[in-house]
Amino acid sequence: MSFLQHLESIVGQVDGAIACSVMGFDGIAVETHQAPAAAAQTASLELTTAWVEYANILSQLKSAAETLKTGAIAEVSVNSDNLITLMRMVTPEYFLVLGLKPTGNYGKARYVLRITAPKVKNEL
Image (tube, rainbow, N blue to C red; front, side):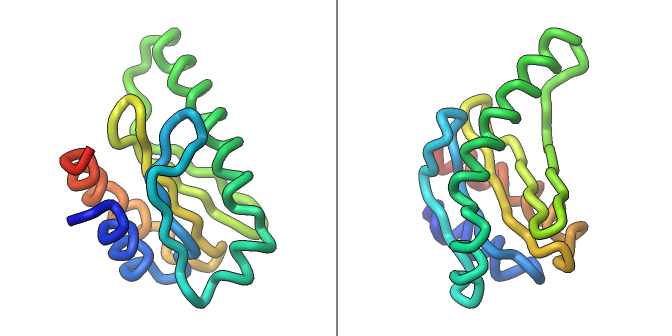
């Protein structure tokens, strides 16, 4: 399965999903899929810019966790008025990021990212 197929599967399975990417900590997306019906919403949210900034924050959280010896970061979510962003670690260099409407299925999004991350890891 390709990255795009995994991302399409994630977006297709989660109600309220807007877009999903495999990203590196440099903020560059390896692959992205956005829900066709959410194209206008994605543009208005400047999702790509937000995810680049969140990659930086996730990198800082990884460093803090190492310094504090709390263990590796597995998942982070940023919940705002117009968007829920879920980030799930795939490898130390890559993570999955999913944009979700605030009314979307948060629990299922977490579950689908958790079961898909190992599959994406195998593709890397």
